[in-house]
Amino acid sequence: MKEELKGQVIRTVKTKAHAVKMAELEKTIGTASARDTASLALFFGPTVEGDLGLIEDIGLDLGRALLGGFELRWSRPFVPDEPVVIETRLADVSTKGNLQFGVVETKISTPEGEEIQTQTTTFIERQGSD
Figure 1 (tube, one colour):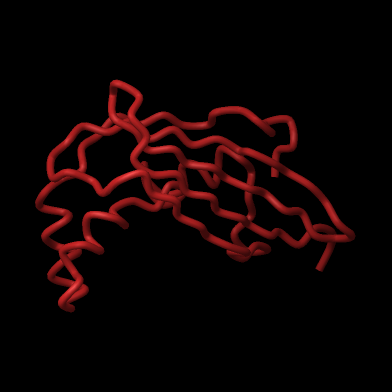
Figure 2 (cartoon, rainbow, N blue to C red; figure 1 turned 180 degrees about the horizontal axis):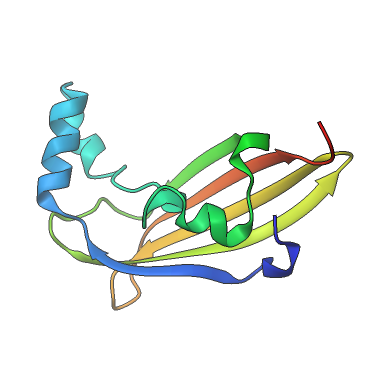
């Protein structure tokens, strides 16, 4: 991963908490709590602009990496069709032995700055030759 990007915002996306996507997620989950879950877990920060955009930006080699952790913190649920701003930054990069750890932080808020959700995703990448 690109250590020089540590602490920097990598991507900022303006979109909506699309009601149709919330309904699709609710239908897919199909449990009694599906409506509540769909209003809480609508986005996965590292792929909000597509599968590889952020991954390529930070230089993560998916062939040598795994997901080390994922945490969600909510301030409130998403409201169907509300506009949101999704800001993703490489919060930390560190190395221990032949492993490199990258922490990606995604903050989702309203255009006025009201925080809705913060996600923390940790990637672990094996360094060196195979």
